[in-house]
Amino acid sequence: MNNESEDSIMITSSIEAEQEIMTVTITTQTIKTSVSRKLKKKKDVFKKDWLNIKEYSSWLQEIKIMLHKLNPNFACFFDVDGVITKGPNFIAVAKPAIQMLIQLKVPVIFVSNTCMLESDKAKQLSAVLGVTIHPEQVVLAQTPMKTLTDFHNKHVLISGQGSSEEIAKMIGFKSVTTVEKVCEAFPELDMVDHMNRVRLSEMIRTQGLVHDENFRPVDAIVLLGEPVQWERALQVITDLLLTDGNPAIVPSEFNIDHDHIPVIACNRDLVFKAAADLPRFGHGAFLTCLETLYKNLSGNDLKYTAFVGKPYEISYQYAEAMANKIALANGQPKVEKIYFVGDNPDVDIVGANMYNNILKQTTLPKISLSGYSLLSDTTFLSATACDSILVCTGVYDPKKHKIDGKNPWKLPTNIALDVLEAVKYVLSKEGCTGNVNY
Image (cartoon, one colour):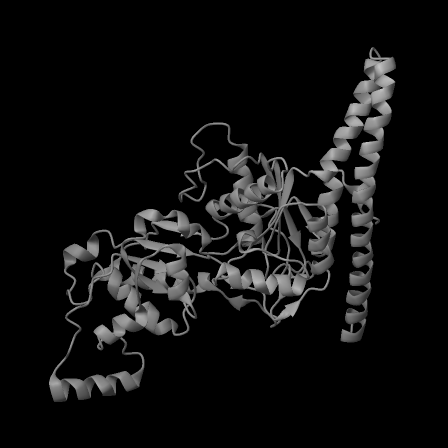
């Protein structure tokens, strides 16, 4: 199919979906009017014949269905890359799909493994979707770290790029350093860059090896996202793991064998879908390199104290808590059902299915399949099920990939062509088909 044909289909789909939004708006108002009229009419009927229990029961059920459409008790969570956007491009049908849910007052949360400020991502989404998306509706890879208060007062190394330091401080970390600052304090660490070897030789020749005497040892390592210079970050982080956070200490056999300083990480995505035909390396690829290097050098496995971001359950829990806060603010009932729409079977679908497993557990405390911590505050947790919906606009391409039928965690509840089809499926499941003109 050529680009002109694809553009034509996309424009047509978008126009049809825009018409559906208008139908939703009109139908919602119609339901409100209908409920009001039915209440007035039946009030007079039951005054005359209050023993007509069968008719009353049928009428009450009808009213409940109508009110359910006006006050949904379900929420929709969406991945961004591969669902709402594809690299720098916007997926056209995402706009009417999200607007449809907003019109119906369905709590909508965007759960992405991107590492940036929630406020910035909310602005981006608002611009492309044509509706106001609030920062509270955005759960990014690092967002659940706000709950890891035991580490907020420790001196931590932040690994990532861009505004990583600002993000770390917004999360709650009060004392942070970076790979670059550690290299400034210990100029002999980064030797992959051959020019650094020349500079180090000149330093030693003229003034000897100089360290920053005020360097504060690192208490924990926080991996927010893939850095720009992988080789430098891999070297320095490994050094900190082998030296208890202080490169000035030469490791002995003893401290190589014992536990390393805490490591907190987010975003296990090995790849993500961008503009290129093949998926691009994500933070998971960087973590794989770090784990392999540490294992080869120390003989031990790298252990994570905490892991957040998809597919880990705490991110889904955090999103549910935010959805319930939105529902409460809108005077709606608590969320009973969650629908998660994603494009990556290994991350989005596995995570949603693992979260569904937690929701189905009847004993307390609930146990995380991933082995990592869950939210301690369950005030805003109420869902009893989470359906996973896989779309074909991102990492998963049905023409190139097959679902691993032997791995139940990768099996989605439903497969949809795109996000608009996914939303239609949700509305159909929730009995809201009367609100949408298919």
